[in-house]
Image 1 (tube, rainbow, N blue to C red):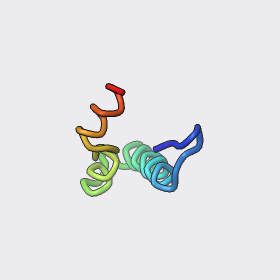
Image 2 (image 1 turned 180 degrees about the vertical axis):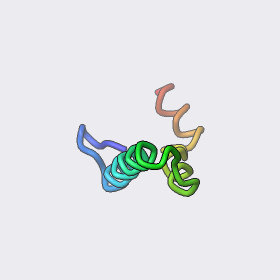
Image 3 (image 1 turned 60 degrees about the horizontal axis):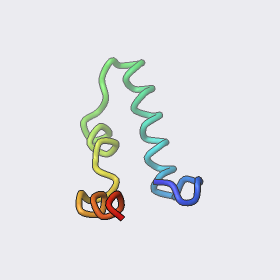
Image 4 (image 1 turned 90 degrees about the vertical axis):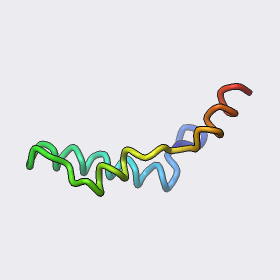
Length: 55
């Protein structure tokens, strides 16, 4: 999501969608399923996560 402290393009998109979800939650009391799925998905595969933290 970040590269050398700066958000990647994908990171920027995720942050915008998280903000959108927050606004939707406040206004409607719910978050659209498609939006929730987008912001809830893993950012990296489980395997890559393990490799990164074990190196």
